[in-house]
Each structure stands twice: as C-alpha cells, then as structure tokens.
Image (cartoon, rainbow, N blue to C red; front, top):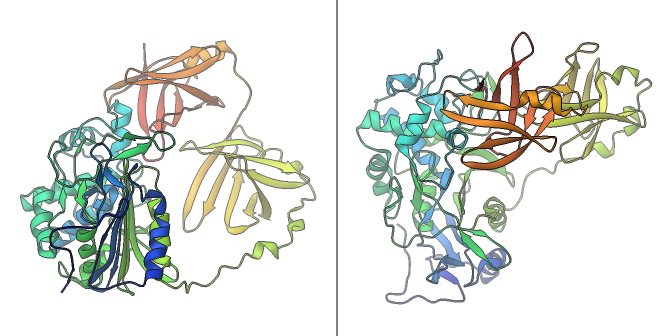
Length: 562
C-alpha cells in the first residue's frame, strides 16, 4: 500500500522547487545532494526537471525544479504531465506481450497476418523483429523528413502508415542486423488495434494504466487535446533565454505517452512486483535481442537491459522536441529512478545515473587499462611499403569517414574528429587498436581500383569502408552531378546544383545544403536525414541516380530525370 502525506489545501513553494513529501523520509544529507544535482534548474526563469526515486513499494522522493510554463509562471511539480518520447516504447511492447498471453497472437507471426496493407517485400517480418529493431524497416522520422515533412509539422498516424505502405525495400534482411526503428513500434500499435479492436490508447488504458492506478497517463493520439497540468516544451535560445519547441504529434506507438513522476513510479514497481502481467512477461520484455545467434545488443523489447554500478538495470531514454526523459529500474534492488525534463539540452541520462549513484554503492570490478603496460614499440613497422595501398581516406556505406596514415613508421587510424588512434599489426593486412584489441581493421584489394577496409568490434559489429580519391574536381566534372532526382517511394524531388565551384542540394521545403564530394561516387551534405548519397551509374559511366544511405534509412533510390 502506497501512503502519501500531503497538505490538504496548500503546497509550499521554495523558489521554483516543489517537493512531494512521502511516507519514507530521506536524510537531509541525501535530499541536499539531490537538490545540488538539479540546482541549476531550480529557478522561476526557466524550464527544468521533475525527479522521482522509487524503493520497494513507495515513491520515496519526488520533486520539481524549474517551470512547466514560462508564459504563465507555472512551476514544475511531481504531478506535472510530460511527453516522455521513446520511453513510450516499453508500454507498446508490453501490450503485445499481454495479447500474446491471451493467445491472440504469437511473436513469431508474420506481421502481414495483421497488417495486410504493408507491402510484400519478399521477406518474412515477424512481430519479434519489430519489438527487437531487427526488422530492417526504415525509420519513419527520416522518411518523413526526406519527403519534406518537418518534425514540428502536424504528424498523424495515418500519414505515417501511408508512407510506410509505399516502401519498396528494407535496410537489411530481417533478423540479420539491428537498427533502431520507430516505424516498427508504429506497426506494433497498429497490430494492437488489429488484434484487440481497440486503439493502443484504449488498450493500454484498460489493460495497464487503470489496473496500476496510473490515472494521469495516456497515449496522446490527438495533438489538439487539452491536457491539464501539462509541461510545455522549450529549447535554449541564449543565456537565460528560451524558445518554444513545438511538438504536434498525433501518432502513437514509438512515442507520445503522457505521464508524470507519480504514475511512472507505479510502472517501475511492476517490474519487480508485477500486478499487470507476471514475472514471465517481465522477463520476456527485458530479454536482450539475439542477432544471427550472437548476443549483439543490450536492447530487449522497448527497453534496454544493461548494468551499471555492478547492478542489473532496465532503462530507456527519450527525446522529442524539448522533452527529455530517462527511466531506470534496478530489479534486484527493487529501486527505480525517474528524470523528466521540458528543456532540450538537459542530459537526463547522466542526471538519472548521478541520482542513482546517491543510493547505490558501486560494486562493479574496476576495468584495468592494460594499454599502459603494452609496449607501443611493438607498433613500429619494419617496412611500411606494403601500407601505401591502404593509407588514405575512406568512407562507409552510411557516410562515416575514416582515414589511415603512417607516421614515424607506425600506422594510425584517424576518426572524423581528427583524433589519432595507434594500430598494431595482428596478421596479414589485419591491424588492431592499441588501446582495445577487440577492435580491428581488415584491409583488402591491394593493387586494385577498390581498396576496402572492414572494421570489426564486439559483438559481431561490422562497418564496411571504401577508399576514395581526394583529387579536386573541376567545374566540368562537377556539372555531371547536377540535375533533378526523383524518389518514387516518397514522391519527392531534390536538385543538385553548382554554384561558385561547389555542389549544393536543394529542395522546395528546405534551405540549400552544401554537398561535399568524396571520390567519384559519394556525396555528403548537412541534412541529418540525407547525410550520404551514393551515386549510381550505368554501363557507360553516366550518372543515373543516387542511393540514399544514412543512419536509419538505407538503399532508398532516387532517379535522375531530364
């Protein structure tokens, strides 16, 4: 039974910090340290954070720092409602597990069984693939942005379904790789509707929120709906100045859960003392994904299973507009920590972990850095002639840059930020990182036109790079790239132009972006949604289009049109 002692008619405002006094009183030393962690936001002139600490069956600390609404001077409290972005995903995932428990679906069902509108891409995509981010389905936010939709536009569920329904390819074969996909959780929300006959909002309200007593929680599926006691969203616009961060989502599944600290504490308790579902369901929710038989990710199903301070932890963060959220659960300690913010530049994960460190003693074994004991003279190469083929600049399929250089008879890898990393030879054309032997590079293609290096790191991770020519192109060479490029899947155009000896990318909805050409076939720009354009040519070496490859969208074709 959770008991809260609250004033009947009044609450005490100390600056802009509002505290919920709970049944368990914490020592002043601890509360003082918590206040110190969040002191920079405890003011009436800016947005801030709402914080909660859960132990056993009680919310033992909750407090607000800063303002929920700057225009009307409304302070943040533990009861303030926040949009918690991707922390929403675990509720979508749990809904699917509850439906499986009822015998209404199986995680290994093909999604086309429930979503007949989703295109047949000649691959079986299972519900489990969606839950684990192993479906290969491109991310909806990048697809929308490419098509010309700004993320502060009004975005609806139907709009996302329409764009997903036009997909003609996947990032990868389902189950063979991992890529975070918000699209998968939109599809899960639609599966809930198909199976239960209820929207995700309706289903979670009856199956999760009401049984747990989460009276102030819902999936926000209509951006025009008025929500009392809601925090507004802000970004920093200069010293002590803020601007509204607009969020107009009417879509649910991967995001859009509205809740507060008090309600979230009840969900945390359900991880180690289940009221909704049982321990088997929690175990399924938190079981890390296996990719190709290798434990590759800590990601489970809408929640990350990892460890910190020597303790098992379930956690997830979320960011939308100026809203930030990070929730962590320590099941073996029966504790949880909540940090919500309505300011875009708050590092809520770091604050959550600092908050947890006030209650959890770090028992993790200290990692020994053996690199200081390793003899760097082992990196000296007796002959560097064989490396001439491999030194130079490289670009990966997703646009990541890397370079290799020989200096003082040693081989170094250079990251995009200009940092040098010493490499040691491990075998024929194989070099590992001096500071971490688990990361290594394998070169190939010596003497050919295509020099390749493959980077490998634990567990089973791999990135493919190709060396490119850094010679400066003339205007006559650059003009061959110019023209209009059309994407049939998204029904949108981009134009590549030439001005002042430089290429640029243009679109009717966005400002022009400069394009950097790497070698003959790689263009990189400043748009986060279109970072790498890989040129496609015909047998006569004429440019016929480009393939867009980025973080969460791969192999999206654009055709050059006359």
